[in-house]
Amino acid sequence: MKYVVVFLAVVGTVSALEGGRCCPEGQAIIRRRTTPHYCWEPKSNTTSFIPLTCNQSATIAPTDEMDFYVNSANQLVLQLPNLDVEYEPGTFCVGNTTSFRDRNLTKAYRVVIICFVEEVKSIDEDVYGVCMTVSAILLFVTAIIYIALPELRDLQGKSIINFCLSLGIGLAILAAMKLVPYSDMNLCAARGFFAYFFVIASFFWTNAISIQILLSIRRPTVSNYGWREFIYYAIYAWGCPAVLTIVMAIINFTPGDHQKPGIGLNHCWFFNRKQQWQYMYSVMTVLIAINIGIFIYISIQLWRNSFSSNHMKALRYKFVMTIRLFVVMGVAWIFEMIGSVSSSHITWEILDVINSLQGVFIFLVLVVFRRKVIKSMHRHGWLDCVSGPVERCLAVGEDEEDVVQHTIGVSMDDPKNNKH
Image 1 (spheres, helix red, strand yellow):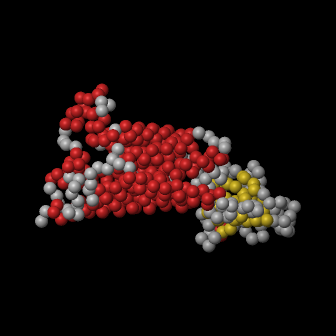
Image 2 (cartoon, rainbow, N blue to C red):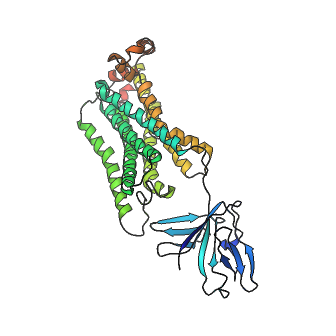
Image 3 (tube, rainbow, N blue to C red):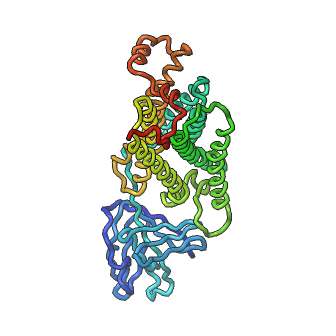
């Protein structure tokens, strides 16, 4: 009979095995429920311990839906439905198993013993969930402020609203996945796909904002408070994530042995980091790289050109905004991606917490540290209770965004602006 037996052993740490074999030639594995497995030599009727020790292990036999083999790199490849899982040498051994009554080993069949290295996390998952909830709330507050103040609803402001809403909803769903237990796999799958859609959409919106900054520097125009140009950006920033999500759902639920994301298939999220890189981190990496390229181009343009003082103030403000937007668009996610391919360490856990709190930093960048927003809130009487400190803060220096409004008709590519 073919079956799977899960065996727990409280012993030492993983030790390497020569050739990945559990026992020498001519010996078989004798399995025990409460004691470690061992090798049995039927001719002399002697036993010896298997030189594989680990905190937690499983003994697996092939079934109709599961098989395994050792590849050319001496890695174990466990073939599960729609998923191949690899184990490094020294974390498994293969061999034949039978019973004491089978002295000729005619009934022996192959099995693999796999060591599972349990990740010990210093920070509880609930902490990440709470941090994501705080981030989502502040992102929604940011969006509400930009919606409520008419002077902030220009093209860039509308894009910021959509960015905050998409990332806020995405983080709220991820927080619910960490804090709220699930029992309905259909609801679980829906949460996973919606979380993917909104998080990816936030990256497309940051890319749209980067493109707007680039075009405003190359072709400055009056502030656009209409909807025509915004609709094109909305089609791009909402449409691309929608297409990616639909394609991923089709791949996920189409029958077959192909590699699937795994969302809603015994999990609310991806099977493992490999699937997450294929379907999520890869898209993020491309968009972050494009944004960095845009920022580098803008920086070069600012460095190559000399302008009058007013123009320099305007362009300096735009440059500072690009740096702020770079922080908004994914520095924390870059650490998240690096941590996904690194071994578990408290440093990466702390960075994960910071990533979970990115909504706080976005609120600081787009509201607290943006003079135009504070000035608008003060003008509408929102800050009357702290009007004294606000007025003193606004009295120091000038609002560079006002300078931008007075220099909007001049392009960086106009040779008249350059000093020779």
